[in-house]
Length: 313
Length: 314
Image 1: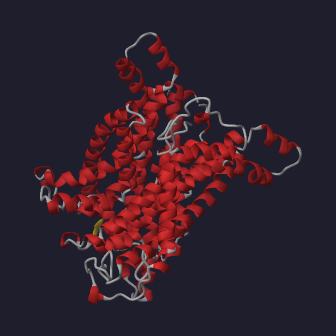
Image 2: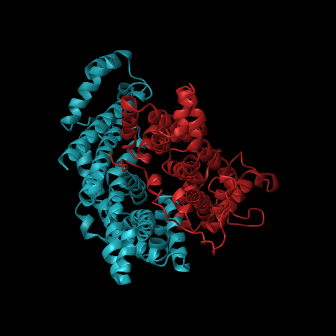
Image 3: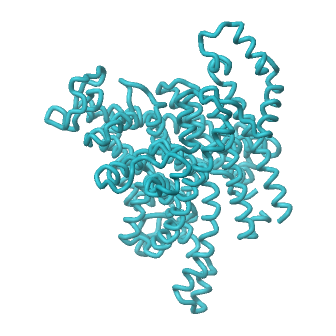
């Protein structure tokens, strides 16, 4: 197990180094130079030259990369000239809110997806399975922003049950919980569609295994076979799925946050894209990539803990 | 390592074995050895959802590309005088915020949505297949380096990468295609690489080597043709994902600008008036996206079932 852990963590570290290189390349793909982005198009050549020197953009690329990475390690993600604050300050306010949204949606999605998947597997190829499969296909195929807007039209426009915008500041996040209903519903419905489909096929995959036949031959009741044998094994891949889908859920959060004007990291990212605020854009990319890598790492390690066969493959 | 590295949503959808649909033959119906393709076609045709999906794809394609010849509308100049008019005889689905006829607009939007979807999928598959097969065939340090590059790029989620690239490059249809293709090739690369690892040790590959066949011959004549099942299935999902990606980028304001349009852009236009009751600017374009994407997902799912060897032991 220790050997596996070391190998897997080492791999994750290499991937992270790769991410920093990619982000650095993106930084240099920017049209014109970052200095122009700060000073504007009509800046004098002298001012541009001076700032270029000051920021070290005249250094060789590998030196610039070294400086950038050493800043990164010190949690210095750069400065947003559009927002007039450091990227870190901005993200420190925004990340907890995104975590709250994503975490709640994830819990809701898993709590609903597992029973749904079991039900679908048990009722396989019957009309109700087809109906549920159909719905999960539709939700999976629906652009997240459209789903969010349909929920707004129906639940805040027609019925007036929930506000169409999310609570705006830290204190109202918990005091105005009804403002969180639609954003969480949007994000969890999209996630739920993916999870329940996966849960269904994982259940079916397990149900044809030899140990299930053995259990039945021993005279174990259907119910016990389902919950004690099939379900427990079917849940294993779902653990991994949660870790692997973190990137997709964070993408969903960008869209959800911009639909409901929810002041999280996703909204900051979206607004930065509109304003060409590249320090924020790239800062968010680094944070999100870090989250994805950690998500995958934790998923793999958990998988190895639950299913020892993995470690030796 | 485990086979469970970072994957994107569409790869996760590539669920384990047994999947939707398809009645089991009543017994006595054996598939004749015949051609493999005929058997694949039989499994595919057995799946009703696949037929529905295929029908929907054909319909949407005809609607978008042939439709404008039958239902002629003016789609070049905006006409603010008739903006947001309700459906009438002259405009069966009303007009949008710029005064374009919505039905005609959706045909036009369908053209670019489908074009972008197919072209981006083609680019993604093209790069991914060659990269994955070359990596798997090379093995050793080259394989490690090539796959770590894929891992690192996959760590940046699809939409985040798209938005950053979308903000860097100005967006024409061509650039949208390239940007989506450049982000989407990672998953097919991983899939094909995995398959190459098992293909390269097969006897027929060894035989080609013994007969003096070079790596390029092995790669393009033997490895890649044998991964075609994986490729076709993934390509189908790629089209679906690309259509959603274009729509989302348009919604976020990073899409193409008028008079060019796509379903997402048309939706985005209507969304400014969601509380005004202009339903015809919101539902038709949204339904077009959902129906098309559902159709591609149905077909992709059925093809995976048809090509999945484990499922053919019935």
